[in-house]
Length: 382
Ligand code: HSE
Image (cartoon, rainbow, N blue to C red; front, side, top):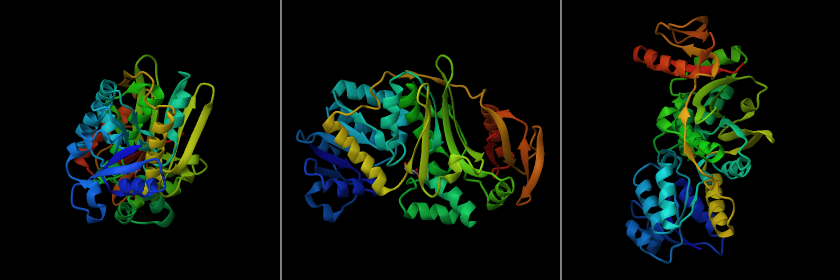
């Protein structure tokens, strides 16, 4: 198989290194944004050098971001070139268009590396979803925020220092806002919902809260409450074309599996009618694990393995009115809901609310943030 790499950043260079040990996959071109002398004649800045080259069978898109990755991938698919991508943002926002382009070009789109870094999650999710009995998806899908939350708790580290560490390690997105505000996790949840629940969600409809405003004082309070904070995603099949779907920091119990997920690891699961609860665990971010999953996508193209996007998809609406739990809220603004005051962080009171629906809490937090942009909240697992 002859391929081109679109991008040669953290994951792209990992793919190139791993392919150097694969005799049957040859990298013929690399799309670059700036000169990289060591690539020699492999490098090109012109996408047409790749899309117009009939000898290139497949394109590996590892440039990330929505544009111009989307336009390049659409053109590649329409031109009949298979595409392997780790680009969860592009997939979550444009899945229908991408699948239509693949159909039009008779090409295949392999997305396994877009969720869970090196974890073989989507592949196995698709395999299990063939029963039609998939009920829920959930877990920790962002390595950067897990590293931050874990290191703040275990070492009492400063948020900004750990974020810089995640950037140096190549875990964080080019714009780490996507990690710390929950957008990366939301994109991965939408991709997983398509694969596991056959549902196309509008990412903007998914309630999302991140960890940008968490303070060490919050983490200390969680320790007093005998809780551990993790950024969790979940999607549940409801009746008809509705799903519950949200991303939010959640206070789990020290004995819960999520509490034992350290550093950049991910823990992603599903509940299927007959299989019950199943979990997948491993490195969810980083050069080598993610590149490995991209290379497995190329191998799957060669071997004709199961396609995570092979089943029919339909649009679904989000309904989070039934996801009810208590919330930890730390804010200097008047809270406006029934709650018990449990402490103070940096001069701002911290509360434990009465049970609230996820959509109600997220809407309320959006209002409160107008008065207190530093507000932090997290769901409390019962
Ligand atoms: N920024 C992502 C993370 C990279 O931290 O999980 C892997 O998708």
